Amino acid sequence: MSDTRRTTSRGTPAGAPRTDPPGEHDPDGPDPRTYPARAVVDLEAVRDNVRALAGAAPSAAVMAVVKADAYGHGLVPSALGALAGGATWLGTAQPGEALALRAAGIGPDRARILTWLYAPGAALRDLVEADVDVSVAARWAVDEVVAAARAAGRTARVHLAVDTGLGRNGIMPADLPDVLDAVARARAEGAVQVVGMWSHLAFADEPGHPTVAAQADVLDDAVRRAERAGVGPELRHLANSAATLTAPRTHYDLVRPGLAVWGLTPVPQLGPPSRYGLRPAMTLEARLATVKRVPGGHGVSYSHHYTTPRDTTLGVVPLGYGDGIPRHASGGGPAGTPGGPVLVGARPGAPGGRVLRVAGRVCMDQLVLDLGPGATERAGDVVTLFGAGDGVEHDGVPTAEDWAQAAGTISYEITTRLGGRVPREHVGVHVLDDGARAILAGHRSTERTVRA
Ligand SMILES: *Cc1c(COP(=O)(O)O)cnc(C)c1O
Image (cartoon, rainbow, N blue to C red; front, side, top):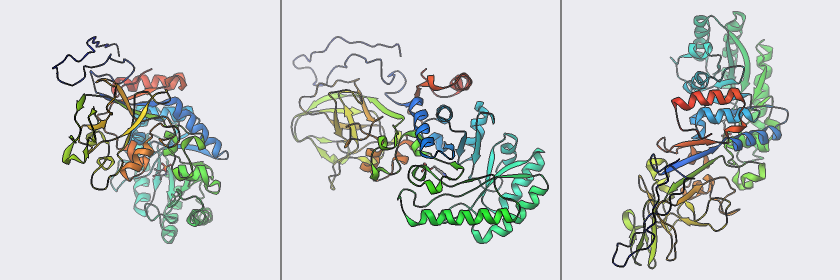
């Protein structure tokens, strides 16, 4: 961050190309030597979001779901931020993610970890040896977990997944007797400990939807049947972020929020993140590459889906779909859709900024903004695609939710698909305890940038 490339030539001499010289290099922004953009992830926000979720589900423990690289936020630092907020569990879809957390130094003393998605032949023995809890969603999975436990010479901790109505992973209630029999035998042998029984909701993001209570009823019934079979679980869990925030009936012993841990709301129709005490942890910002004057009637980006309405200034933002910016968030075109929003002229929360929409097509590596005829921006200035706010409509800070709306998707997809080539910088490290900081320091030497 010490590179202060400075230039003092600010005028545009007559006859010179009408492309602005770069502005003063703002050292508080993406490091242009490495990448012209960055995602800053605030671990203090992660901590506070988990606290808010724990407050919403006071009877339950919190499992922070950190699958898919913590929804794009960076697996290990984000997990540590969530633990700082009081989460005692971490959840991952894939076994490799769970093992990566253990390998980074997050031991069972620091967090229980559950992983739930694997195919026959997965390295379950590694999970058992790493003290990772394993979901069992089919009869074959019982057999494989038992084989892994025998090979490891220790008891596997399992959670029985029940399909209570989502129609995805999980044991159909009709198949429960067979699975419960096998689990009872495995338990008698000491191969498994039934830690949990759990399920996942289909309509949690539509609060009050009748299937939410119906799925809870099916889970209750499955738990009763497991108890009768002598393999009752220690814990029941069902709630994702939306249910944690809106459906107390689903809280049981443990809640499994993902999206809300990162400060985004799964129920944007009910209000902005702050309504639930959440604040987005990720800020995506970039430096303007080129800033230049163009005449009116100038087509912009592929297929000219935007044409300048007057003499104006264009700014090129060096982020595109190769970085995970959805091409569906292009602006203009036959449908005249508004593109994704970008805050220009000030950082989020500071006065004086304005929100512009992507002009024309989002390309692989770049997108274009019409900065307007009176623009004072210069190449190198920092613009914000989304950040820690409540949204364009609420406080003028664009959010991942705004981008999701521009692209016709959900905010989950915006942060999760952010490209691996965009550097993540983790700030707010002061919220971590010494042990967590030591883990992060070890991790920093092997992975992405961490700014202390
Ligand atoms: C992703 C996931 C969650 C978290 O869902 P959010 O909507 O992000 O809170 C919880 N449980 C399971 C099984 C999941 O796959």
